[in-house]
Image (cartoon, rainbow, N blue to C red; front, side):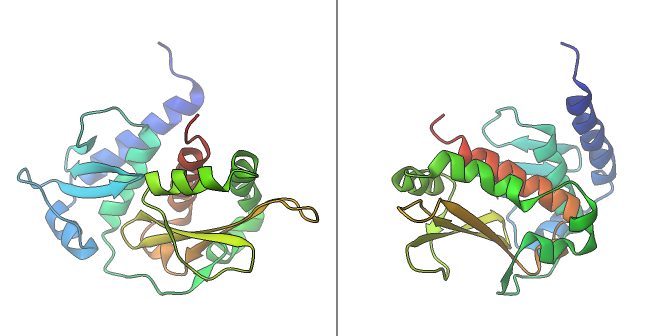
Length: 207
């Protein structure tokens, strides 16, 4: 099957990152990130309820299933960066993380919130079930009438989803908040991919 331009682009990025990954000390990066290693000295990375294994030859799923190239790219970058940083404890908006990049690019937080509103308005129970399937939990501060959920997108990269369901006066709305140190683990472009993958996974739950 011929690849589309978009799919081919993701494959090209992933292959380039795996070439760079070959020069990475996986065990040292895993230690800095607080990740475990299996008997084959592959770093074990939990992501979206699955375990991924990262070695100098690339990324694979522990269950042997296929995965998207952009997932592989995010995990390669995460391991290569190998940050010793830890969450700062203050949750901020995506625009606060991106700074000028947010205004210059086409990426919009609204594009992330809209699929969640469409999928879960009037279905809070389904939101809670979907969140549980992806390791989410009720946590975090939020206003009255809302549901606040916390997720670990990757180890040390927490995300807060605040969901207000529609009522007689207001439509449903969603706020996504990120730890202030998120870009210490992933450059903004890779973080944007990570969050997009998360939203796609959550919004297609049960579909």
